[in-house]
Length: 106
Image (cartoon, rainbow, N blue to C red; front, side):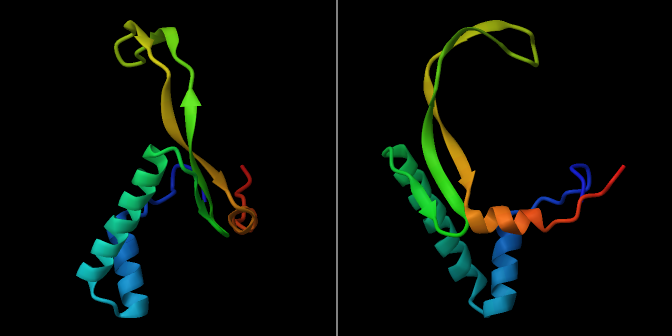
């Protein structure tokens, strides 16, 4: 699998796959999934860390502001205030699973 051939998996794809494997109604799955994502957002906005054992951790991380940031599209120099971003750290099980993906040699 290379970066160029990697396929995106969307929320809709995940709902479809879970629906097929569990036979739970799609509408119920969509509402549950949206609710889970909303709770992730709320936790991060309140400064909490979201830990998903076996998968990874999401946490709010402070990014320093910069006086001379550059817009890569226009080249315009602008100032960026300090702000928080969502940071993800993969858990051990996810790291091990990813290590099993065969690497294509060039």
